[in-house]
Length: 362
Image (cartoon, rainbow, N blue to C red; front, side, top):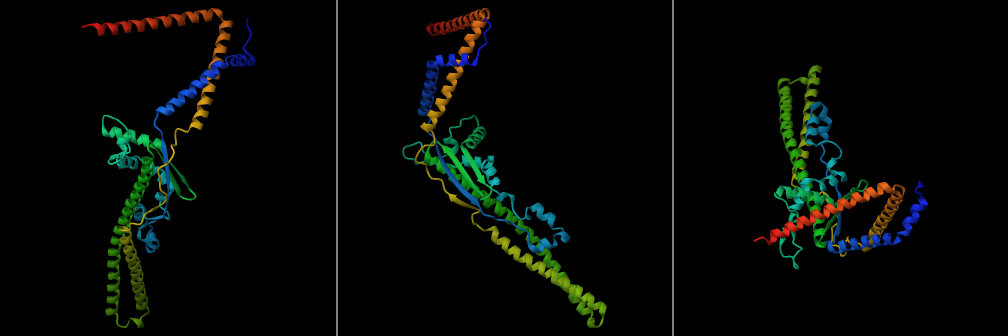
């Protein structure tokens, strides 16, 4: 008998086992429902913010003289040049919110303990995540990995809008985590801006001192020329020299005044506390859990159970067809399975008897 297994024969075998398919589907649905009832619910809160440009540019006078004075390379090293700072892009905030440093600060932040009926104490987020490890460093490492799974960050390049979604077991905690994450981003921006402003202020302070010394030297040179040449108007050569010295004084004076204005502006920026990000939506505690969602759960588990039932029935039909086509191999396989089952049963009985004898021993 060498008849091959056709699709119609396979389909008929699956249909004939409809009870098996139904039982597996119902079993998977019940198992998913039980897990949804046993596992704690999950709440999701969202918050969003946009960035405001806080560019730090090189003074215009220095830009004009950068090539001649060699200031362009210095400004590049200090991160003061360019029309837009890369840290203002939404992609930067995406990476920042998923960075180990910010997530570690978030784990070590204090939150009201939601576990008592009336929260009166505060604990770190690391304690609320129930991460256990032999060392605190290992616990923080595992906590960071868990936060990256439960915190979803997205951004829109056109609007510079950054969205943060946080899942937690308690609704108040999920909202508090999202809001705290935005506070940490704002604090990081302030630290970064102050650092840039300090670098710019120090750079300009040095340049102001140098420009002031150059201005004094140019003015002294012009004064010495006037004292030495009382009748310089009558000499064409001296007229050219006077114009050159006077032009040098005017150029250095303009540079000094521009640097002085930029220096005062940098001193103001150094103590500026204006937020660099603008919060669009603050997170609020959700009223309904994000999970379990029973409609989605029933559909997913029903489809999964139905698929497993079809696979099981198809496998049974293929196995029976193979056994009919190869009776000798089928009997040999059944004998091997029976022997393996007997050996496993005997081993379990011996271990059970040994354990019972140990318990009875005085």
